[in-house]
Length: 423
Ligand code: UDX
Image (cartoon, rainbow, N blue to C red; front, side, top):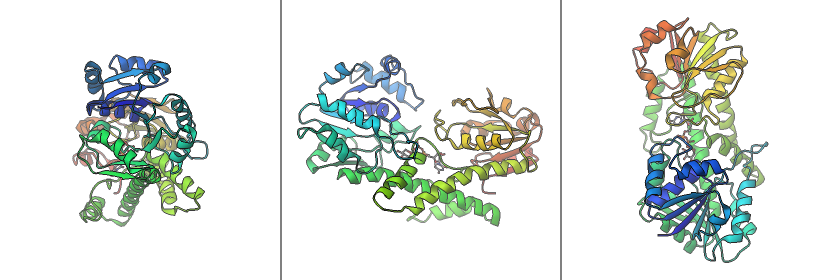
């Protein structure tokens, strides 16, 4: 059992804190946000994540997990490992803004125990760990990189049963010390350099984003050429060298990681004098996918969106989360509004941002009422159990765009116009 401090209690920090407590460690989570810490201490999760709130309650009850917003109390916790899990948002140029990470590094330098390890879990560009080591400036304190590969919606599962765990440090003994925290997890473990661990995270995200863009572009080509998109992509994925996952076409990818990490990778590569044209093209092509989806919706309305009311089902960037950061649904809604439409959107849990021309509905059927077209932009399974006849009857014009390819076959007959992405 080790004593672990986790700094930053967002998606990554909270999942890490709960996961490490479940692995038998004594964990204290720290965040400057007092109200977040207060509700966490009462067992309430600030984010919607499957199973997280239950586990917060259990770990508080067995005293393996506590939270504080008091920096002196956190410093007194005498942790063997301090995990940095603060956000690295995009700065105005698209690079990762590391100011919070560096700030935290400066603070922990003052109280870290001799022989303790500062573990960077925040997604940081290659070369950041070395800078953090410099900021900490203590030969008795080590720095390690242990990037996360958590998907929102399945974050706890991904923590407990990851495909791999990678830890980078200046020496193998430090990497192994950090890997020891995960000894109860049987997944493959890789001990490497800080730079390799840092770059692995960006390379993995950029590769997945590239793969999705490839699938989305092939979906568009299928639509125009008469090929069957599912047959093409599923058959492609049957090749063991390719594999089936992350080939499901959609109206573009989004979320809190792929958009910012692809852009940051292109920028950090250029600092090293390396061009990454595949990643740059992926970002551009994804933006084009949003416009393409809006054009498909416009076609269902006779070509023009001016004065039209569009019902949108789904606001979150994918199903299973209330997160709307860089959501494809919102990007498409903005294009629709920009072209003169009014949007009525419904999402089972996500909230609509304040946007002129966008109104949030309380139910799927309410959103569809009197609409000129319906667009399904997030793959919530509950949409598939709506009665297509009732939805079609509620609309002014029974036209639907299935941007996630989730609607059952009978929807095709209930609507006068039906268009699925890739067809
Ligand atoms: C991602 C990575 O998967 C995770 O390893 C990393 O640490 C953080 O970023 P997340 O942002 O939670 O996780 O979302 P993910 O499930 O990867 O989906 C990203 C986007 O791709 C979503 O917009 C999703 O709808 C889209 N997607 C995903 C598809 O369109 N088709 C697919 O087959 C899979």
